[in-house]
Amino acid sequence: MGAPSLSVLQRSGDEEKYPDAVYLLEGPSSCSMGIRSARRPGFELVIVWRIQIDEDGKVFPKLDLLTKVPQRALELDKNRAIEAAPLSFRTLLGVLGIEAALESLIKSLCAEENN
Image (cartoon, rainbow, N blue to C red):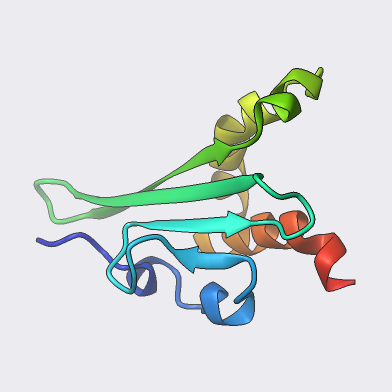
């Protein structure tokens, strides 16, 4: 089975809804999605996903969050929010589900840009 595209996991069209912030790193068949902030150059979140299928045929999407931030931002992050972001994203996925978690993440990063 080939790698799933974003449309398999997330049908709400975030790339179309947020064209300035969301992009597929490898085009339509990408296994990763970038979210960038125009107000914070160099600050980017990357969602990487894969599909696992068990021996009974159950499908389990696995999503991970990676952060790309300037070194200076890491130094200023006294609460270590950037370091905790991947684990926090997994918690958000469990609470909200895939589509709502992605939407929430995009909105939080782009909130200032949309006001």
